[in-house]
Image 1: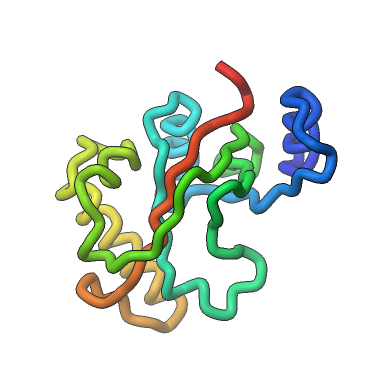
Image 2: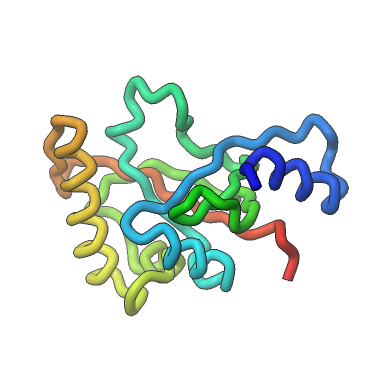
Length: 151
């Protein structure tokens, strides 16, 4: 099922206003299936993305509180609908243990988060012909919760 149809089904079942818009549908980087399952099990309630790579980006807007997203698996199948609760742009070096824990990956520690995300962002930046610097690069931190399917 396509993300837009999945979102329309969610709107109908949740009795959301007909004009409610889908902000985006996306896979998590690294291991989309594993990370989508963490969201589905309500372990992963936050994410982060490279703010510096949003420049000139037309397809993926910077997340905003109140936005509705469809989380996809590695085959682009919709897994769930989330609503964004909180968004902030901060330096990579300022991500704290609270956010790392909410991302729900590995042992949920800040050390684990730093290692995994430093490697991920370095690769992402390299693909864009840029250099990731953990001291100066900014990240978008986002907190969300699932609204569909209901548990």
